Image (tube, rainbow, N blue to C red; front, side, top):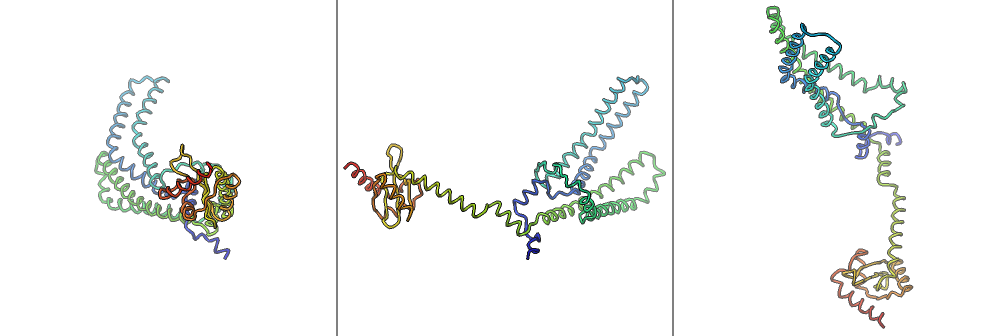
Length: 351
Protein backbone atom coordinates (compact mmCIF):
# COMPACT_ATOMS: atom_id res chain seq x y z
CA UNK A 1 0.00 0.00 0.00
CA UNK A 2 2.90 2.32 0.83
CA UNK A 3 4.45 1.69 -2.56
CA UNK A 4 1.26 2.47 -4.41
CA UNK A 5 0.97 5.76 -2.51
CA UNK A 6 4.35 6.80 -3.91
CA UNK A 7 3.26 6.37 -7.51
CA UNK A 8 2.66 9.67 -9.28
CA UNK A 9 -0.86 9.01 -10.48
CA UNK A 10 -2.59 12.30 -9.59
CA UNK A 11 -2.84 15.26 -11.95
CA UNK A 12 -0.89 18.38 -10.98
CA UNK A 13 -2.77 21.01 -9.02
CA UNK A 14 -2.77 24.70 -9.86
CA UNK A 15 -0.30 25.42 -7.05
CA UNK A 16 2.14 22.77 -8.28
CA UNK A 17 1.96 24.14 -11.82
CA UNK A 18 2.61 27.65 -10.49
CA UNK A 19 5.60 26.39 -8.46
CA UNK A 20 7.09 24.68 -11.52
CA UNK A 21 6.54 27.81 -13.59
CA UNK A 22 8.15 30.01 -10.95
CA UNK A 23 11.22 27.76 -11.05
CA UNK A 24 11.37 28.13 -14.84
CA UNK A 25 10.38 24.50 -15.42
CA UNK A 26 7.95 24.87 -18.32
CA UNK A 27 7.14 22.90 -21.46
CA UNK A 28 9.32 24.62 -24.03
CA UNK A 29 10.56 22.89 -27.17
CA UNK A 30 13.93 23.82 -28.66
CA UNK A 31 12.77 22.47 -31.99
CA UNK A 32 10.06 25.14 -32.12
CA UNK A 33 12.74 27.82 -31.73
CA UNK A 34 14.87 26.23 -34.45
CA UNK A 35 11.98 25.81 -36.89
CA UNK A 36 10.67 29.33 -36.26
CA UNK A 37 14.11 30.93 -36.68
CA UNK A 38 14.87 28.97 -39.82
CA UNK A 39 11.49 29.63 -41.44
CA UNK A 40 11.35 33.30 -40.47
CA UNK A 41 14.91 33.98 -41.60
CA UNK A 42 14.31 32.21 -44.90
CA UNK A 43 11.16 34.27 -45.56
CA UNK A 44 13.03 37.47 -44.74
CA UNK A 45 15.94 36.46 -46.96
CA UNK A 46 13.59 35.82 -49.86
CA UNK A 47 12.61 39.50 -49.91
CA UNK A 48 15.77 41.01 -48.46
CA UNK A 49 18.39 39.15 -50.53
CA UNK A 50 18.26 41.46 -53.63
CA UNK A 51 18.72 44.58 -51.50
CA UNK A 52 21.40 42.87 -49.41
CA UNK A 53 23.53 41.81 -52.38
CA UNK A 54 23.04 45.12 -54.17
CA UNK A 55 24.12 47.09 -51.10
CA UNK A 56 27.05 44.77 -50.45
CA UNK A 57 28.13 45.05 -54.09
CA UNK A 58 27.98 48.86 -53.98
CA UNK A 59 29.97 48.88 -50.77
CA UNK A 60 32.69 46.64 -52.22
CA UNK A 61 32.75 48.69 -55.43
CA UNK A 62 33.22 51.86 -53.40
CA UNK A 63 35.95 50.18 -51.36
CA UNK A 64 37.86 49.06 -54.47
CA UNK A 65 37.48 52.51 -56.03
CA UNK A 66 39.32 53.98 -53.05
CA UNK A 67 42.16 51.46 -53.24
CA UNK A 68 44.30 53.51 -55.65
CA UNK A 69 44.06 56.86 -53.87
CA UNK A 70 43.70 55.69 -50.26
CA UNK A 71 46.50 56.88 -48.00
CA UNK A 72 47.07 54.27 -45.32
CA UNK A 73 47.63 55.82 -41.92
CA UNK A 74 46.53 54.66 -38.46
CA UNK A 75 43.82 57.35 -38.37
CA UNK A 76 42.51 56.69 -41.89
CA UNK A 77 42.52 52.92 -41.32
CA UNK A 78 40.51 53.30 -38.11
CA UNK A 79 38.03 55.64 -39.83
CA UNK A 80 37.64 53.25 -42.77
CA UNK A 81 37.08 50.26 -40.48
CA UNK A 82 34.56 52.28 -38.47
CA UNK A 83 32.60 53.22 -41.59
CA UNK A 84 32.67 49.62 -42.87
CA UNK A 85 31.58 48.29 -39.50
CA UNK A 86 28.69 50.75 -39.38
CA UNK A 87 27.51 49.85 -42.89
CA UNK A 88 27.80 46.10 -42.25
CA UNK A 89 25.90 46.50 -38.96
CA UNK A 90 23.09 48.34 -40.76
CA UNK A 91 23.11 45.69 -43.47
CA UNK A 92 22.81 42.84 -40.95
CA UNK A 93 20.41 44.68 -38.60
CA UNK A 94 17.17 43.39 -40.24
CA UNK A 95 18.39 39.80 -39.98
CA UNK A 96 19.49 40.22 -36.35
CA UNK A 97 16.27 42.00 -35.41
CA UNK A 98 14.18 39.31 -37.11
CA UNK A 99 15.94 36.51 -35.23
CA UNK A 100 15.50 38.39 -31.93
CA UNK A 101 11.78 38.98 -32.48
CA UNK A 102 11.17 35.41 -33.64
CA UNK A 103 13.06 34.02 -30.64
CA UNK A 104 10.95 36.10 -28.21
CA UNK A 105 7.68 35.26 -29.96
CA UNK A 106 8.41 31.53 -30.13
CA UNK A 107 9.03 31.49 -26.37
CA UNK A 108 5.99 33.64 -25.61
CA UNK A 109 3.63 31.50 -27.70
CA UNK A 110 4.81 28.37 -25.89
CA UNK A 111 4.85 29.49 -22.24
CA UNK A 112 3.44 33.02 -22.18
CA UNK A 113 5.13 35.87 -20.34
CA UNK A 114 7.53 34.49 -17.73
CA UNK A 115 10.37 36.25 -15.92
CA UNK A 116 12.18 34.40 -13.16
CA UNK A 117 15.75 34.37 -11.89
CA UNK A 118 15.56 31.04 -10.07
CA UNK A 119 17.13 29.02 -12.93
CA UNK A 120 20.14 31.38 -12.68
CA UNK A 121 20.66 30.70 -8.97
CA UNK A 122 23.79 28.62 -8.25
CA UNK A 123 23.07 24.96 -7.56
CA UNK A 124 26.12 23.28 -6.04
CA UNK A 125 24.50 19.86 -6.33
CA UNK A 126 25.03 20.12 -10.09
CA UNK A 127 28.77 20.13 -9.47
CA UNK A 128 28.58 16.54 -8.27
CA UNK A 129 29.93 14.41 -11.16
CA UNK A 130 27.87 11.33 -10.27
CA UNK A 131 24.45 12.81 -11.17
CA UNK A 132 26.06 14.37 -14.24
CA UNK A 133 27.26 10.98 -15.46
CA UNK A 134 23.84 9.52 -14.72
CA UNK A 135 22.26 12.16 -16.97
CA UNK A 136 24.54 11.18 -19.84
CA UNK A 137 23.03 7.70 -19.92
CA UNK A 138 19.51 8.65 -18.89
CA UNK A 139 16.35 8.10 -20.89
CA UNK A 140 16.17 11.83 -21.59
CA UNK A 141 19.65 11.83 -23.16
CA UNK A 142 18.74 8.82 -25.28
CA UNK A 143 15.61 10.59 -26.55
CA UNK A 144 17.63 13.72 -27.42
CA UNK A 145 20.13 11.60 -29.38
CA UNK A 146 17.30 9.88 -31.26
CA UNK A 147 15.70 13.25 -32.09
CA UNK A 148 19.01 14.64 -33.36
CA UNK A 149 19.66 11.59 -35.52
CA UNK A 150 16.12 11.68 -36.86
CA UNK A 151 16.50 15.37 -37.72
CA UNK A 152 19.78 14.80 -39.53
CA UNK A 153 18.34 11.80 -41.37
CA UNK A 154 15.19 13.61 -42.56
CA UNK A 155 17.08 16.72 -43.64
CA UNK A 156 19.57 14.51 -45.47
CA UNK A 157 16.77 12.67 -47.26
CA UNK A 158 15.17 15.96 -48.32
CA UNK A 159 18.47 17.34 -49.64
CA UNK A 160 19.24 14.07 -51.43
CA UNK A 161 15.86 13.98 -53.18
CA UNK A 162 16.14 17.60 -54.34
CA UNK A 163 19.67 17.09 -55.65
CA UNK A 164 18.70 13.82 -57.29
CA UNK A 165 15.84 15.55 -59.12
CA UNK A 166 18.22 18.28 -60.30
CA UNK A 167 21.08 15.96 -61.20
CA UNK A 168 20.35 15.93 -64.93
CA UNK A 169 20.24 19.71 -65.18
CA UNK A 170 23.28 20.07 -62.94
CA UNK A 171 25.39 18.41 -65.64
CA UNK A 172 24.77 21.46 -67.81
CA UNK A 173 26.61 23.71 -65.33
CA UNK A 174 29.83 23.18 -67.27
CA UNK A 175 28.32 25.02 -70.25
CA UNK A 176 26.85 27.92 -68.20
CA UNK A 177 28.58 31.19 -67.42
CA UNK A 178 29.37 32.02 -63.81
CA UNK A 179 26.28 34.20 -63.21
CA UNK A 180 23.83 31.57 -64.46
CA UNK A 181 25.61 28.91 -62.41
CA UNK A 182 25.32 30.98 -59.23
CA UNK A 183 21.61 31.68 -59.88
CA UNK A 184 20.95 27.99 -60.50
CA UNK A 185 22.79 26.88 -57.36
CA UNK A 186 20.98 29.52 -55.32
CA UNK A 187 17.63 28.28 -56.62
CA UNK A 188 18.48 24.66 -55.72
CA UNK A 189 19.70 25.73 -52.28
CA UNK A 190 16.47 27.70 -51.69
CA UNK A 191 14.43 24.63 -52.66
CA UNK A 192 16.40 22.49 -50.23
CA UNK A 193 15.99 25.06 -47.44
CA UNK A 194 12.28 25.44 -48.12
CA UNK A 195 11.64 21.71 -47.85
CA UNK A 196 13.90 21.51 -44.83
CA UNK A 197 11.74 24.15 -43.16
CA UNK A 198 8.69 21.97 -43.77
CA UNK A 199 10.46 19.03 -42.13
CA UNK A 200 11.57 21.21 -39.21
CA UNK A 201 8.04 22.52 -38.65
CA UNK A 202 6.69 18.97 -38.55
CA UNK A 203 9.42 17.89 -36.13
CA UNK A 204 8.79 21.00 -33.99
CA UNK A 205 5.09 20.19 -33.72
CA UNK A 206 5.79 16.59 -32.67
CA UNK A 207 8.50 17.68 -30.23
CA UNK A 208 6.25 20.34 -28.71
CA UNK A 209 3.50 17.78 -28.07
CA UNK A 210 6.06 15.38 -26.60
CA UNK A 211 7.56 18.07 -24.33
CA UNK A 212 4.09 19.03 -23.07
CA UNK A 213 3.29 15.40 -22.33
CA UNK A 214 6.66 14.91 -20.63
CA UNK A 215 6.13 17.97 -18.42
CA UNK A 216 2.66 16.76 -17.43
CA UNK A 217 4.18 13.44 -16.37
CA UNK A 218 6.88 15.26 -14.43
CA UNK A 219 4.37 17.44 -12.58
CA UNK A 220 2.14 14.55 -11.54
CA UNK A 221 1.80 14.06 -7.80
CA UNK A 222 1.42 11.25 -5.35
CA UNK A 223 -1.69 11.14 -3.20
CA UNK A 224 0.40 11.99 -0.15
CA UNK A 225 1.78 15.10 -1.89
CA UNK A 226 -1.75 16.23 -2.72
CA UNK A 227 -2.80 15.77 0.91
CA UNK A 228 0.19 17.74 2.18
CA UNK A 229 -0.38 20.53 -0.35
CA UNK A 230 -4.06 20.71 0.59
CA UNK A 231 -3.09 20.94 4.25
CA UNK A 232 -0.59 23.73 3.50
CA UNK A 233 -3.03 25.73 1.40
CA UNK A 234 -6.10 25.21 3.57
CA UNK A 235 -4.27 25.07 6.88
CA UNK A 236 -4.32 22.46 9.65
CA UNK A 237 -8.00 21.83 10.61
CA UNK A 238 -7.16 21.91 14.33
CA UNK A 239 -5.31 25.21 14.00
CA UNK A 240 -8.12 26.67 11.91
CA UNK A 241 -10.67 25.56 14.49
CA UNK A 242 -8.58 27.12 17.25
CA UNK A 243 -8.25 30.40 15.34
CA UNK A 244 -11.97 30.41 14.61
CA UNK A 245 -12.72 29.80 18.30
CA UNK A 246 -10.44 32.68 19.34
CA UNK A 247 -12.06 34.97 16.79
CA UNK A 248 -15.52 34.06 18.07
CA UNK A 249 -14.46 34.69 21.67
CA UNK A 250 -13.03 38.10 20.73
CA UNK A 251 -16.21 39.00 18.83
CA UNK A 252 -18.30 37.85 21.78
CA UNK A 253 -16.29 40.01 24.21
CA UNK A 254 -16.78 43.03 21.93
CA UNK A 255 -20.50 42.25 21.77
CA UNK A 256 -20.81 41.91 25.54
CA UNK A 257 -19.09 45.27 25.95
CA UNK A 258 -21.99 46.85 24.03
CA UNK A 259 -24.69 45.46 26.33
CA UNK A 260 -24.26 48.18 29.04
CA UNK A 261 -24.81 50.82 26.31
CA UNK A 262 -28.10 49.22 25.20
CA UNK A 263 -31.50 50.81 25.88
CA UNK A 264 -33.33 47.52 26.30
CA UNK A 265 -32.83 43.74 26.14
CA UNK A 266 -35.77 41.91 24.60
CA UNK A 267 -36.02 38.31 25.76
CA UNK A 268 -37.68 35.06 24.97
CA UNK A 269 -37.76 33.66 28.50
CA UNK A 270 -36.57 30.23 27.39
CA UNK A 271 -33.33 30.87 25.48
CA UNK A 272 -33.09 34.14 23.45
CA UNK A 273 -31.85 37.66 24.26
CA UNK A 274 -31.54 40.64 21.88
CA UNK A 275 -30.05 43.99 23.03
CA UNK A 276 -31.17 47.18 21.24
CA UNK A 277 -29.62 50.65 21.26
CA UNK A 278 -31.12 53.80 19.81
CA UNK A 279 -29.54 57.26 19.59
CA UNK A 280 -31.79 59.61 17.65
CA UNK A 281 -28.92 61.99 16.86
CA UNK A 282 -26.82 59.42 14.96
CA UNK A 283 -29.13 56.49 14.16
CA UNK A 284 -31.96 56.30 11.67
CA UNK A 285 -33.44 53.29 13.48
CA UNK A 286 -32.70 51.16 16.55
CA UNK A 287 -29.74 48.81 16.12
CA UNK A 288 -29.07 45.31 17.37
CA UNK A 289 -25.88 45.61 19.45
CA UNK A 290 -25.90 42.12 21.02
CA UNK A 291 -27.78 38.87 20.70
CA UNK A 292 -27.39 35.29 21.81
CA UNK A 293 -29.05 32.03 22.61
CA UNK A 294 -28.92 29.75 25.64
CA UNK A 295 -25.77 30.43 27.73
CA UNK A 296 -24.91 33.57 25.77
CA UNK A 297 -28.46 34.84 26.23
CA UNK A 298 -28.21 34.28 30.00
CA UNK A 299 -24.88 36.15 30.10
CA UNK A 300 -26.42 39.12 28.21
CA UNK A 301 -29.20 39.24 30.81
CA UNK A 302 -26.69 39.13 33.70
CA UNK A 303 -24.71 42.06 32.28
CA UNK A 304 -27.96 43.97 31.62
CA UNK A 305 -29.06 43.53 35.25
CA UNK A 306 -25.62 44.59 36.53
CA UNK A 307 -25.85 47.85 34.52
CA UNK A 308 -29.57 48.37 35.09
CA UNK A 309 -30.55 47.89 31.45
CA UNK A 310 -34.30 47.06 31.31
CA UNK A 311 -35.32 43.52 30.33
CA UNK A 312 -38.56 43.21 28.38
CA UNK A 313 -40.10 39.84 27.61
CA UNK A 314 -41.63 39.60 24.15
CA UNK A 315 -41.39 36.21 22.42
CA UNK A 316 -42.46 37.18 18.82
CA UNK A 317 -40.24 40.26 18.68
CA UNK A 318 -37.25 38.42 20.18
CA UNK A 319 -37.54 35.61 17.65
CA UNK A 320 -37.74 37.99 14.66
CA UNK A 321 -34.90 40.26 15.82
CA UNK A 322 -32.65 37.29 16.63
CA UNK A 323 -32.58 36.45 12.90
CA UNK A 324 -31.23 39.94 12.02
CA UNK A 325 -27.45 40.31 11.69
CA UNK A 326 -25.54 41.91 14.52
CA UNK A 327 -25.03 45.66 14.05
CA UNK A 328 -27.96 45.98 11.60
CA UNK A 329 -31.00 48.20 11.98
CA UNK A 330 -34.32 46.81 13.08
CA UNK A 331 -36.42 45.79 10.04
CA UNK A 332 -39.13 48.19 8.95
CA UNK A 333 -41.92 45.76 9.71
CA UNK A 334 -40.77 45.70 13.35
CA UNK A 335 -40.66 49.49 13.82
CA UNK A 336 -44.09 49.67 15.48
CA UNK A 337 -43.43 46.85 17.93
CA UNK A 338 -39.95 48.11 18.84
CA UNK A 339 -41.20 51.68 19.19
CA UNK A 340 -43.83 50.53 21.71
CA UNK A 341 -41.19 48.66 23.69
CA UNK A 342 -38.81 51.67 23.68
CA UNK A 343 -41.65 53.97 24.70
CA UNK A 344 -42.41 51.64 27.62
CA UNK A 345 -38.72 51.61 28.62
CA UNK A 346 -38.39 55.40 28.41
CA UNK A 347 -41.50 55.68 30.52
CA UNK A 348 -39.98 53.43 33.19
CA UNK A 349 -36.81 55.56 33.22
CA UNK A 350 -38.82 58.76 33.74
CA UNK A 351 -40.71 57.24 36.62
